[in-house]
Image 1 (cartoon, rainbow, N blue to C red):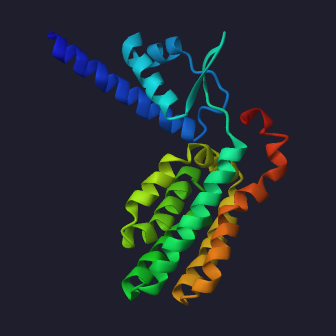
Image 2 (cartoon, one colour; image 1 turned 90 degrees about the vertical axis):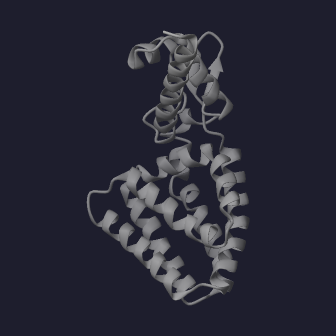
Image 3 (spheres, rainbow, N blue to C red; image 1 turned 180 degrees about the vertical axis):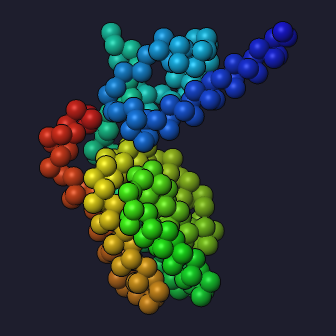
Length: 228
């Protein structure tokens, strides 16, 4: 086998390992603070240490993996202050983008939002798949960023919220919370459809802060070991 082919296979393996572990850390299959050992990942993926170490380095650079002395690598603990700052930033940015969106919203865009609401309604009416609801929530909020051509802002928000994304998964573990979020989306849709721009800013902030209120007590009890 040529050296170029070996390098290519190593890079492919590293990408697969990185993508898989990233997904598992973000959806809490790998919990904050849980050990992720090189040897176990080598065995799991039948890979050498080279692509595993490359994947671990990428995860560390993304803030998802932390090296701890005498312990090895663990899924990074959640940073409560970072979560609050992301919510603060997103609330300001999203309120502005949504206000602009409402000013020029078309009947087609209203129906697009209604369709997204109906998807969520179906999801919360059955045995809730948390990951699917998380994705539906993502798609709903991304609509106004897309139509206002603010996709870069949306990407920046997504890249900066790896703590917040995992925090939201903690919130969604209680499936009743999915229903609460859906109810809030219905209220938000009504504000949008009626073009009630004056009500959007405060509601978006309240909506994004919702998880903080819903699991406030559990943060200091059940989930205390997940946080710095």
